[in-house]
Length: 357
Image (cartoon, rainbow, N blue to C red; front, side, top):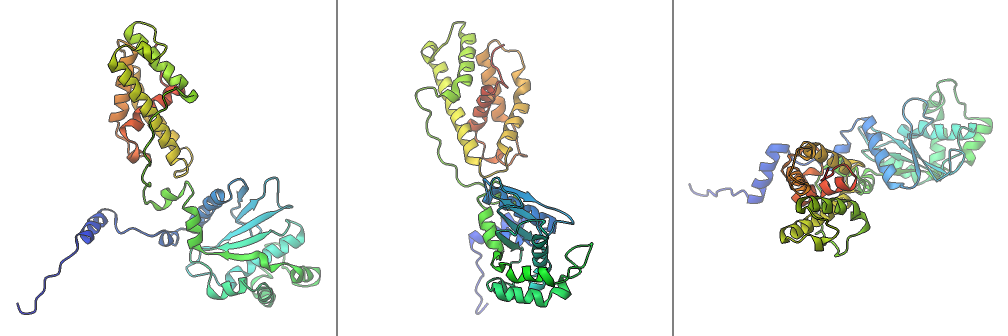
């Protein structure tokens, strides 16, 4: 046909389309957080705070009567009568407007005036759709923010600060408002929050993306390190049980096959230790320990079978670990054969597996 040109779809597009048939197109983190409920948004912010303020005391307040505080961060040894920072989580369908925060400002002013707590060092508003233009401008102009709050007190604050009384803006309280440092109030944009959350051990479980490439594990040192003592002693006992002769070092192993086996077990142990370190800051606390528990549950029946000697038990158990099917643990897809074998020796190091009776 005259003028006809075939449409050629690039192969990369075809690959992406095939992946999307299974899981759909990837959802960027900024879009995911907008799907959260208010409760989940607060939990996400709490995760960020626990990671970002590592070494400080992070406390989350939920439900009615929070006095304007969702998350408080205290310097070590401090409480509400000392140095602290406050975070207020707002989950609305639009960027935050001034009318969304007047009552929260009013609570901080009232409860700091009433002596319920000392005024925070800083107080930030966090919302999945960010801070709107008008509010952002006010937060950068503390005196104007004060004026706008005073002008809107009757409409937004007088009956909303507490459920037990109306709060009038007059007398000593008005003097407190006029003397308050409104520069402590600020906003935090969601992209900055996501970027800081990225380094936390909760990020992959929330947003996916997979683990980065694992570095190559170096060869074990020639000398046995102190943290290897127990599993190495267990291996020596297993070899002694097999040889029917004492084994106190690799020189006593005799057979090349046993020396090579011992070398492989040390390599596997170091591989598993490297995996433990690699995932430590990338998954939620306890995830690696749950992988160890899963391998233990998968090999313990094999471990408890009868064998002619301890060496044959080691071979059977490490093979059982290698052959296990694991899908529930997020580390499982990157746990290589040597990792699984090495975890058996980590378990032996913890006296959970013993090669000889």
